[in-house]
Amino acid sequence: MALEKILVVGRQPKTQQLARPFTKKLYAADEVGDVWELIDAVDPNLIVFDTDIPKHQIDSALTGLRHRAIQLPVLIIGRIEQEALSEMRQEHEWTDCIENPEDHSAFGRAVDRLCLRQQQANADRFFIEDCPSSVSIVGKSRAISQSLRMIRMVAQSACNPILIIGETGTGKELAARAVHILRHGSDHKFVAINCAALTANLLESELFGHAKGAFTSADRDKTGLLELAGSGTVFLDEISEMPLDLQAKLLRVLQEHTFRKVGGTEEIQCRATIIASSNRNLLSEVEDGRFRRDLYYRLCVCPIPLAPLRAESRKEDILLLAEYFIKNSSICPEKKGKIKGLTSLAAEMLNRHHWPGNVRELRNVIERAILLEATERIGTTNLLLNPACLFEQDAPAHEKNAFQTKDFSLEKAEKELVKKALEEAGWQKTRAASLLGITRATLYAKVKQYKLQEPPKTPQTVS
Ligand SMILES: Nc1ncnc2c1ncn2[C@@H]1O[C@H](COP(=O)(O)OP(=O)(O)O)[C@@H](O)[C@H]1O
Ligand SMILES: [Mg+2]
Image (cartoon, rainbow, N blue to C red; front, side, top):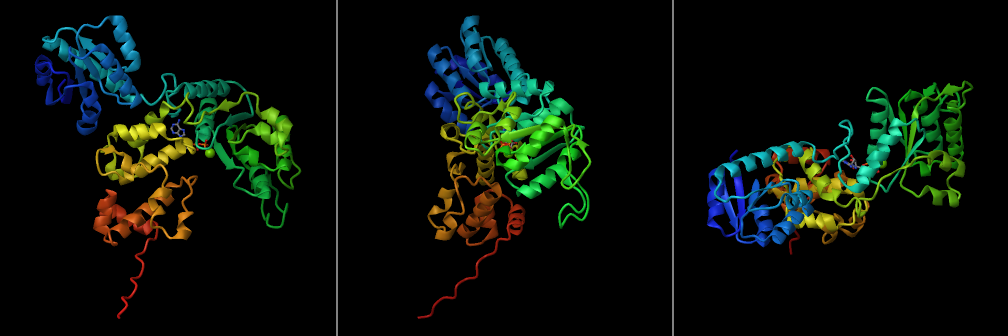
């Protein structure tokens, strides 16, 4: 297999001669310390360490690759004991060695082996090995594998209701959908309702439905979600926000498996799986009298926890998720496949961030960066971890607060960026498009979508 670019680390001319026939472009680094800059600059397909490089330096390079989530095959020239090689592979899976620096055919075979293994691993490297294929929960950390184990166990049991707990953006809805798919398959309905988004009356009639004439505007019968879901799933998002009297009614449904529509007399069977989610500590809500204790215990049989992204046990997923979003985002179709990844500094920056909005925030940061990035790798300048900073200098005072740290709305960020680029370009669309790294057609579409208009020019004062 011939590779586009090989990076040889070390000063041995023999190693370069060995690698040369297998690549179109050969790059050389004298020392391990130069590797990161070269990876960023040339994006090689293989790294070769020659016999000069001490083992401890290779070990730290392999650790560096893992920290930066760089999936490059590594070939070491020299004799390495099987046990040491296995340890190296634990650090960086795609590592191999050949003993003889003059054996071209062994080099070729090792390259083939490594590349093949890497291609296979690439296809499902975002998911843990036993993640069911119908569930697309990205992550390989200890935390995510524990959450997945719980998801699987709970889905296979008859547990109903099910509670999912975790901070905002940790993937509670994704987990709920996973439980649903594993328990019911994709033929059954999954209906979701956000308890924080509706008034008490609306929430009740959405959930239970209502009979014609139950209240002034009830001019016809309405089927509630509990009935609509059939044998599928009802997802009650942010259950802590449910009013207390509705909590009592929900408890009755959970115990009796029947309910009545608002203003109705008929008992209706509820066959659905009820999954609730909460980003608040429900026990403290109970203590503060905002959540019913009996409902809490009914829900909390086998809760599925989702760790915050910054937790030690989940942190290692940050770059994997970032890469997944870079690969799969459809925010900018013309850039699809063109952005290869992150620069090392950008990766470090993501690893250090606190992620109060968790995976949702990370996805928005990456999509914003895709929009802005004009090169093959996302750099630190386009990773706007706090979009508020962008506008602080010149936004009018009343607009400054429009961009709260907790506001992760991508649309708002995109609108502001497009507007900023237009202003910067003096409303010249071609320049603004090139500042944003998008085509003119896309820019026109965005201007229309966000109804952006050039402000009228203030007349020049004549003195
Ligand atoms: N492990 C994950 N893999 C891939 N995408 C994820 C993961 N966790 C969360 N997301 C994405 O992040 C966003 C927020 O997830 P969501 O399930 O709505 O979080 P929550 O309900 O906890 O606020 C969604 O776009 C979701 O697809
Ligand atoms: Mg949610």
